[in-house]
Length: 185
Image 1 (cartoon, rainbow, N blue to C red):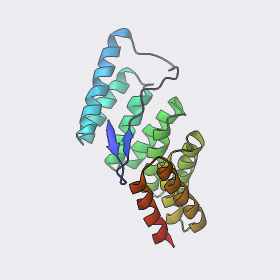
Image 2: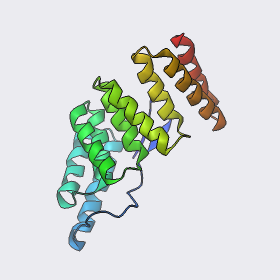
Image 3: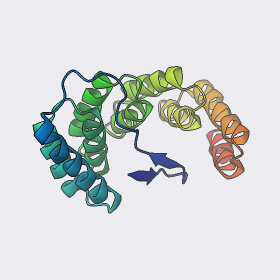
């Protein structure tokens, strides 16, 4: 599953967790879990979010500690603007794999869309602690700060996002962030 954010940045789904899972599916269920997850990934990629949710749900019925399925189902709920369910699934994904930066990003986006901006800021901050080179985390946090009229904090994060995009050789995204910064003033 690959998604693009509003700035055109490609966001790939995390690989299934390399952490030790509390349990593994029964050998005969493993193939079914994988098939449901692949089915969900295909539906998600085609924008069929309800179908994706149904497939990930089937996978979770067979293996309820599958962080990847929770992450993807949560992201599908987010796409459908069902923010409470998105937040619940992304929270479960974070519990299963606290290093999955995309779970923090998308849960933060769900919180922000659900007008829980302080929780969104906390998630973006957690993501930055895990990956301080992720410009999108700074950008999203800057937007959250700006929505709260916290100009100094927003300005600092917009600048950091732009700087990181420049260091990554992405001048187009850096310029988009700089435009947002100019509009903030």
